[in-house]
Image (cartoon, rainbow, N blue to C red):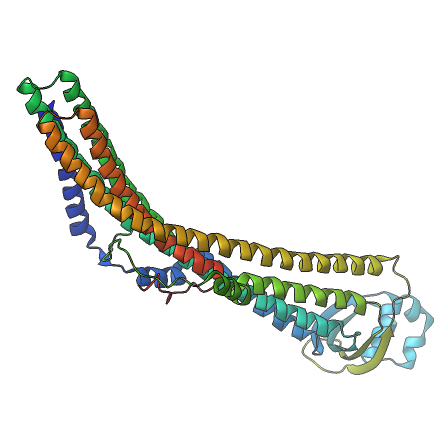
Length: 458
């Protein structure tokens, strides 16, 4: 069994080294810093591309709303042919080909088929619509601002996702190192137990217990190696890169002194700078314009129109006539069955909802900031505790190894010390990881997370 576990450990280690060497030789991974990963994500992440598309659509909405302030011109070419008496009579007049012979009763009642090519230019211009169009333009502008704020927030969320994924890869690497070291320690304990058993200084149950612990450490080593690959795939997805992309991370997981703001400063910054709060404010302003549009529908509307038409018997040849007309129309809806009043009530209700959502958003942001702040403070203090625990656990393991070799302690004590050493190292690296990510979450909550943040460029 001793030889079997040694061979298994050697094979596992060799597999890791061979796989890493083969992947490096085949893919030739390029170096990837956290700042580079964030830059790539802001360029390639599909969620940001979707947010950019939303801003383009909103910008087009502004141009569309402004178009209603301008006159609308149309052109048409219509070809007709028929023997309807009214049609033939009117067409001959438009073509300016009507003669006295056309007053003959048989020709008026049963005219021959007549063709006509009508070339028309027309135009309309809304001179006044109780300012509904202007309200529509302002509404589109506010929605455009909301889309831009959502783009900014999406960018911050992507940066946070990349930061978390990047540090997850670094944490997985440290956990792989801890798992490998724990396997070596477990092998050393197994060797000690085997020697003491061979010498008749311990019972077989101690040896079996050491073998069980060795098997557990090998399973942890396999799991840690797969976790590294899983976190790399998550990082590639966060960056918007192919999931099988291979990068070499030059950075290692380590403690970094990051400036933690006061709770009051973080909350104040969040309420002033959070893009999603600004988006909600823009949406509220847009909804106020919707109420104004609904009110404008009760007012009068003044439209100007004009048209010019040329009628010819053939498409290319002349010989026809032309005419024009223009005018102004004043329109006022007197009764619509209560539809406009209902629409106004609906828009006012939506405005009340927007106001309530703005208040709810502010409350939620305050809560997010407080959670992120206290989490950052907690993990910062946990690092100090975990760092001290590592030294204590390693010293305890050394003492228990000596005592076990001298027959002064049991295998249970030794394995307990070994497990405490592994947990202390794992807890330390997890504390470092959580401090980095919780700090990024604090910046995300306060609305200040960006590619130049201290957590991105430590």
